Image 1 (cartoon, rainbow, N blue to C red):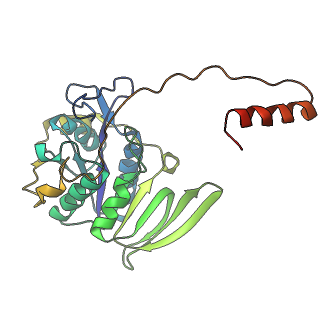
Image 2 (image 1 turned 90 degrees about the vertical axis):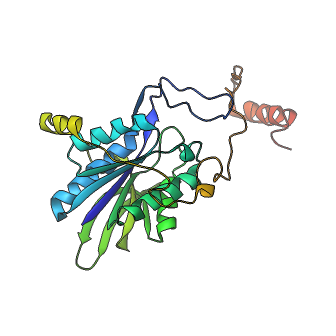
Image 3 (image 1 turned 180 degrees about the vertical axis):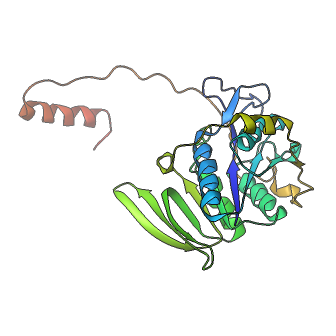
Length: 264
């Protein structure tokens, strides 16, 4: 079984900077980490390999410094990693990112099962995983909290999806893409041998040309959504607490809401 895990390097939430000209995140020179949800995706990929055999391939798209998250993936036991890096990818929205990642997966020969974290903490859109599945024309299983069964011969997978009011059991054909939530597992720590292996590894870098991507569909040029302004919301003033008997407070509250035009 060929397992692909898509991960992302994100700025440490304590050190986020915005480029005032492009309104995009500044990643070069900023302390960064592996997107926390992607660590659960890596772990699930490794557990799937241990149970059903195969290889775990990890992909990340980003600047050269994103190589660090790939080294972390190698350190915990992943088989192969790929850095997708090119100035043509800069400023990509979720649509352009999903396109580039899907072209990369095609370039490395496809996958039987793709794991992604449910979302990235810097954008919180949860769109790239489903976008990749759509580009590849395969089923998507989102917010998965448990992989119940994989039948390699019949090419089927059964999972539990976390819903607002419970869990949903879903069966899908393979290949498929799964986005995982943190409840699915407990990520392992890298071994000393794994750290040494990662430090010596030569990590391949793939450009837009390497993955045979249309540059008009990459980066800012290929992004239909643009950030026009980034700002810090004004602090809200203190609220008002209404005290008294319920029969007195409710009419007073209604009058205040009507005066404020919240209700008519």
